Structures are given as C-alpha cells and as structure tokens.
Length: 445
Ligand code: UGA
Image (cartoon, rainbow, N blue to C red; front, top):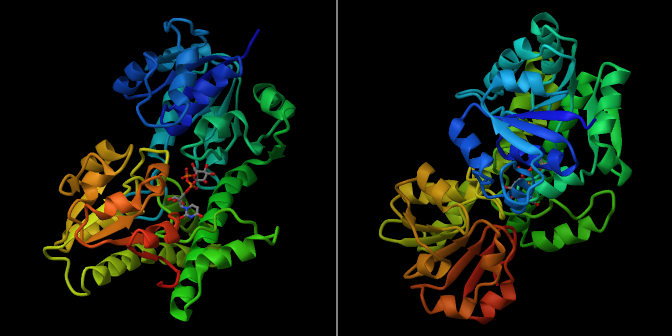
C-alpha cells in the first residue's frame, strides 16, 4: 500500500511539496486554515506565481479531467488525522513584529490542532524553518497530546522560489533529523525516488537538522553581502565588482554562484532567517558567534539606500521633487510574484516618499505590489513605465528586461539614464544606444 501523506500549510512550500509528493506516487491530502486557498487549489489553481506548479497540480488534483486524482485538499483536521501515515508541517514562520525573533505561532497552532487528531500511528515531519530547539519542544508536545503512536522528525526544505518544483523533485540534498531508525526508514521510503536519482540523504539529530537550514541561508546571505561590500570598495577605488566576482569565482572553493552584486537580498526567507538566527543564538548564550550576521544585514540594507542616492545623483543631485523615476521590477527576484521585503519596492517607496513620481512595472508582481504600496504609480508594460522618465532603475533581473531594446526605449524617456541595480544588463548595448549606464560597484564609462 502506498504511503498516505498530508501536507499542512499550502503556501509556496506546502503547495509545492503536496504536488511533488503526488508526483512521486503517494496519496496526498493538503490542509490549510484559509478556505479560499483550499477552494483555489482544489480546482487546480495556484494562489501565487511559481513556474510549473500549476501544471503539476492539475496533473494530480482529484476531479480534474485526466488527473491521477492522488491529490486532494481539505480544511478538516479530523480528516488529516485519520488519513495520514506521514504529516508534513509546512506553515510559515515570519519575523515577529518589532523583534528579530521568529514568530512560531503558526507552527504551534498547527501542532496543537494536529496532535489530538493523531489517533493512529504516524510520523509528523516538520519542514518549516524554526529556531533550533523547537523540534525537541514539539516532540514533547506530541508525546503529551497525541493519543496514537506518534513520532516527530525534522526535514528542512531548501527550495528556491522560481525553481520550487524542480528543487522539490530533484533536491540537491535531503536532510532528516530523527530519533529512531523507524523514522529514518519511513523518510527513506518517502524520498526513495530522489535518493535513487542521486540526492544525498543526510541523517542527523534534531538540533543539527534545524541548524542546517539557518546555516545554509546565513551562508548564502553572507556571500551576497560579501560581494556587495566588495562593490562598495570597488566604487571607492574605481574597480569593477562584476570582473572581480568572475575572477574570484574561478576558484572552486569560492564558486561563481551568489556573487552578483546589486541592491541585495530580500524575500520571505534570507532577511528574516538571519535575524531569527541571531535572536536564537542570543537566547542560547552564543550571540557572539553570530555578530557578523549583523554586518551582513546592514551591508544588505545599505544597498537600498545607496541605490536611492545613485538615483538622486542621476536626477540632478538634490531633490526628487518633480522628477519622474521609472522602476523596472517589483518582486524580490525574477520568476516569482513575491514582493515580501523586496529591495525593488523598498527603493521605489523611498523615492516616492521623498517626492519623486515613481512608476513601477513588473511582469508578475503587480497585484502584490499594488496591495503593499498602493500609493506608487504603476504601468502595464516597461515602455509605459519609462515614458517621460528622468531616470530608469532596473531592480529585478527579469529576462523581459534583458530583452528590451534600449534604442526603442531611449525614444520614450526624457533623459536616457539607466541604473542597473542587478548588474544584469549588457552595459555596451545600452551605451551604444545612447544611454548613460551605471551599475553598482562598476566604473562609470
Ligand atoms: C532562499 C534560499 O536560496 C533557498 O535555498 C531556501 O530554501 C529559501 O531561501 C528558503 O529559506 O525558503 P529564495 O528566498 O527563493 O531562496 O531566494 P534566493 O534565490 O536565495 O534569492 C534571495 C535574494 O538574494 C533575492 O532577492 C536575490 O535577488 C538576491 N541575490 C541572489 C543577490 O542579490 N545576489 C546573488 O548573487 C544571488
């Protein structure tokens, strides 16, 4: 009999995990406490933009013509408790309001709702990013409140938005924190297909599994802030950070990836994860070990201010009043509609608040951007956004922006100045078309 799997929480992580589990051949039941989300998913629609996810979902959601019918959704905890052999908890852990620490209320609520419904033997698997020590606490809660024979495991997730489906079906590693061989065996069964395809399977204790996740995101954040610090030095010394990154990246120990200087990292993970990690280390008396993350965070936040200053300089050096600023990009990265802690929107917002007339365009993030920043101006296309602009800011590196024709765009603006906040456009192409091209950490032409 195929394992029966439930997925609790159907955001980016949960919706993708549920569809991927169905793809791997399991019977899957997804739960969310928001009925509108469940209604959408149950008809094969995804409440966010994630390439390939809707197709995968439609392939498996019960009731859709031609689907395998292996994937269903519910809002009923009773149904989840009765159904699952393995329950994946995928709810979000945002930053607490006014604090660095992580808000565990959604995880705690999920465990509190699930535990009393676990009447038959089951493995509960935490996937949310949590402060180290949470798994120990939640295991004790299950021992106390679950009526059946229930065990906990911790299995952090490393998927990237924009690549969520691929990262989930073909993970570059699977990490499981377990307390028994039985739990390990069950998780090996769940992940048999990717393991057979070569994904390494790393077995650890609870604290290590929790730490792997925050350590990985901290390392990635550090790599980005490192190259952005080099960009600052390059600007001061007249060097070129793109060349520098290419050259150091040839050293295999350093590697080329995550060395793109620009307006820095954003999104729902990296910024809040490094802050929660610092907060937790403080509670554990290990705060000194992570003081460098404070610097990583402040280098990153400085990038946004620096971009505002470059834009100010471009429009004459003093004030944004009466100046038209076009912003290409609203999401925190391309191939996503996620605008959480987006550097692009942050910069757009700062300029708007200083009196600039800002017009934003993004291929997929418009609805979310409008909800978050209703007072900004929005356009339906890149050419519309740049019309009459005194300066154009390229802040999210969508392919659509790389494919723009600088000569055509040049006819629409008031002043052809482009500031590349992602070091992703071709400087020669823009300069040849008559633009003043400036990028962060690179020499002026
Ligand atoms: C990140 C991690 O990469 C995933 O492994 C992890 O699972 C996920 O967080 C999570 O914790 O859920 P994600 O937030 O989707 O994934 O985004 P990334 O691709 O890591 O990019 C983060 C930010 O860094 C973006 O704003 C991106 O534009 C920026 N970035 C990335 C740079 O500024 N420079 C680079 O060289 C690379």
